[in-house]
Length: 475
Image (cartoon, rainbow, N blue to C red; front, side, top):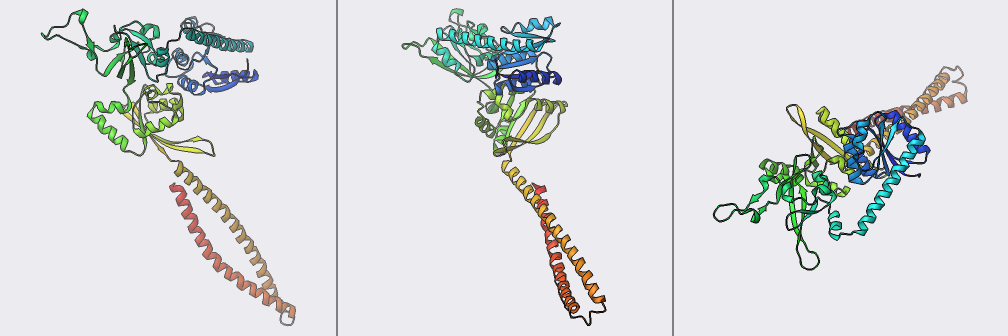
């Protein structure tokens, strides 16, 4: 196999470069080379390589196996692991991932190429098998559910979960097999569940017990924590008029929705939305907790959906067009307020964005990072034009100074002629010398007039230079 795109994830630069040379030698394309595990998730989503070649031991804020699992689950990409031959315990952890391919170090070039081909072929075969299985057992409701760009499930009349889409697995961190068949109410925090009681104030018998939940609930996940979600509910109309199942769609409460929960957030929301700049807030888990409408409009132009904004930024492939995850890691580490300008696009059509990063600190530790974004393309283009004009002006001034120098040499030579004629004893009797003397004195007058004009010109030139430099520096 040749021409496949390979993403190399390895924080030992010498090893990564050596692997890249081998892959290029064997006609593979390089989708990227990253040294941080969080960046690997983002690169995988953005570049969609045919294979991720990942070495165990890569640095980053999450485990390599966890990152690989996200790449496999989120983007359906094969991962080839490079592992030391003595790390048996780690290999056992890797094997828990569905049918992985493992390459032990040290390895030969032929071993690397063989393992890459095996991993890609295995992934293609497994994908084809899943597609054939899906075609053999088509469930139109499941197909519709999978197309929803938000966590969604269906439940039957008993409240048991009957279908789950991939986004729901991401939200709860439960596998589909762990969710289907369980009562949906078991995932709702008890404080959000309301039990009906009868008219006498007694609880209804268990057989008739009814529990309901509001449109905002705390949804438990596999890690023991919970996510505050907004529940959108509706019924499924199957063949005939039977309404035997209900669909539930969940939206994680972040961004503008959260502003309505507290009075201070309402004020914060109004302030943010009144700004001409794009503003968003990221917490230490790299989640976007708040944003204004201008930022939301900008992300929509990038193709980022509302639901994706509720995910960690390293799982939003197109977020790299806004900022890199490792940049925010460094900002949280240094606790520093800083600014920068980033350029997007090509030289022919560029977009310049100004960023202002403001840390929010508690007890000396940064807990949130406010990012203020401003489109300064027009300003930057004006600045660059001002610089070009200034540079051209300085070049022209240099040429004019050369002219001045040349005229000074002419003047010097002319004065030598004048002095020679004046001192010659034959000037009074020689008509030719008399004519030369007359002409040279005329030239002398012209040069004196030129000096007066040049003095005025140079003064004006200095003023223009100062004005041009001031305007350029001010930009």
